[in-house]
Length: 117
Length: 111
Image (cartoon, rainbow over all chains, first blue to last red; front, side):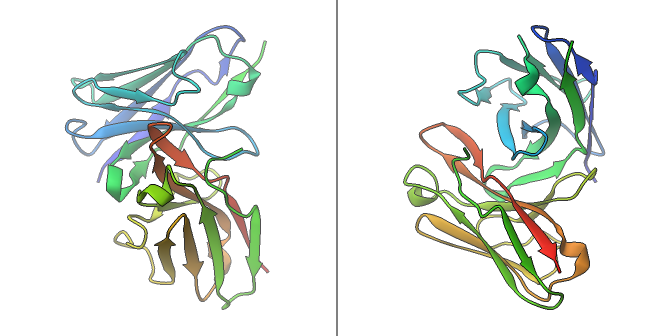
C-alpha cells in the first residue's frame, strides 16, 4: 500500500525559506495529484496547494506568493518550499495523495516545523 | 475563520449516537461539490473516514455515516466507542478560492 513520509528541518528562522520533502513508497507517484496541508497548533487544517505529476499546480490564494511545489518522479518525491516564513507558519505539515472526488488518501504522519529565531 | 463551519466540540456516552455538522456556502457545498470527512488522532496520519458525502473507504466501520443536503453536511457516529475520541474535519472544494477548504474541526469526547 502507498505510504507517505514528510521530512525536513524542524526549525526555521523567520524570513528564511521552509523546505520539506514528501517521499512516496509502495506505489507510483505518477498520474495523481498530491497536496500539502498544514495545521498550526490548536488550529484547524489549511490546504496549502497541490501538484499533478505533469507539473500543474494549484495554490491556496492566501499563500500563493510564497509557495512553490515540485516533483521528482525519479525519486518518487514531492517538495514544498515556503519563502519568507514568520511565526504564523509554525505548524504540522502533511502531504497527501489528492484523489479529488474520493478525498485525500493516504496522508503522511506529518512533520512539525517551528519558525523561531 | 474557516470557510466551512463546524461545532468546536461534541460529546456522547459510550454506545450513543452523535452528529457533527459542516455548514458551507454557495461556492462550495451549495455549488454541489462533495464533502469528505477525516479523523485526526495525535501523532498519527489523518484518516479518510467518508468520501463523496456518504461513502466509506474499505475498513471504516459502518458506525460512521455521512450525508449532505444543500449547503450543509453531517457526519454521524453510532455506537460510540472510547477509541472514537478524536478531531474530525470536513472538506470540500470552493469555486471562489479555486481550491480545497476545510472546516475548523470538531473534537469528539467520549464521556
